[in-house]
Amino acid sequence: MSDHIPFEIQAQIMKRLPAKKLIQSKMVSKQWKSLIESSRFMTAYNLSKTGPSHLFIRFVHSLPDSLKPLYNRIDDPRIVGSSHGLFCLYGDSTAGTFTVIWNPSINKCIAVDMGMHFDGTSKIGFGVRPDTLDPMIVKIDDDEHTVEVFRLSTGVWTNRRIDLPRESIAFTIHQVDVNGFIYWSVFDMVACHLFIVSFDMKSDKFSEVNLPKCFTSTDKHFSISKLRESLVVLEDCEEAETQKNVCAIWMMLEDGAEKSFTKLYTISTQDTLFRVLGFRKSGKPIVGTRIVDDERGMGVLLSVYDPHSRNIDGLATHRLSTYTTLFVSSYTETLLLLDHPNKPIPYQSQTIH
Image (tube, rainbow, N blue to C red; front, side, top):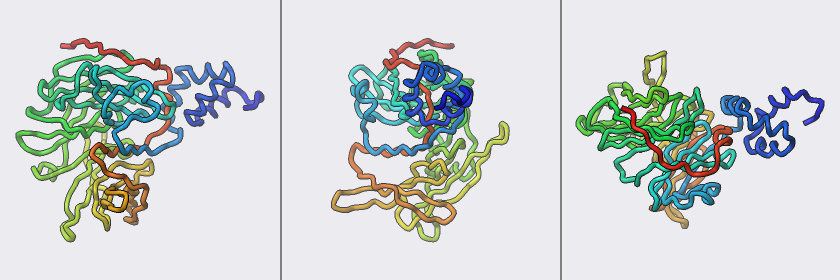
């Protein structure tokens, strides 16, 4: 940039640069380095949401290349979710279970010791508080009805008893972070149907989300996702006329404390619908359609579905295997984690009564 451009204007321009370009720009001058590393600049950049948007598609159980040098000890890593440009993965190792918070935009990650081996009874949630931009991990023990909450700003797990909306419930692996809340789909083992609970990242309290009456049936199957900054319910159902598998998209609307759901549209394709995997920044859903079988083996065709024209445009073919998972998420570049050291955070816990 020209020395004739006022520094304030230079700062505004840099806020619109991709995160990787910003990291490179720190080498230009001490003044730029000081600006980019300042908490004020990083907060403004992280809140602006003007950075480039990307689509993340993960096909197999393997760590991204940027994570391998530090955390290749984690076996079979699984993705929990994404929020504010960060992704959360977890997996077992000989030393216990670790959660990894990863920012692909700046090639930075932090491993958090969870102090346990994953045994299937615990479920993990991940989110970033929108007011403080503090990444949080929530660990729920279904058997003990306890919860531990980790905040990156403190580096400590807080352990407490929790009041759940119902007894005899089991959390599923499906969770999303939306506007200060982490949502899970939960199975009621007495009523034998799914419902949704929310976790308020400010108050650390759980609440039940009221769903339309049609979701109280025992044969109702659904999962949850995020469309921009709204909770979305993906209802698996059968089309009455064709008896084909389709997916109804329901969006949660908020009016103050009141929350309600409205049905946006139903996804129906010419090919067999595998499932809805996520949404692009434009709002169009990404779907897995027919299982393809050719000389390279079995696979799922990933496509973008246009709800207005009902047309689909192919993205890629995903090959199926025993150790394969599908995770799709759009994200915007941020500088979160830039000011944190690249070293594992040991397990530290405190009990709150």
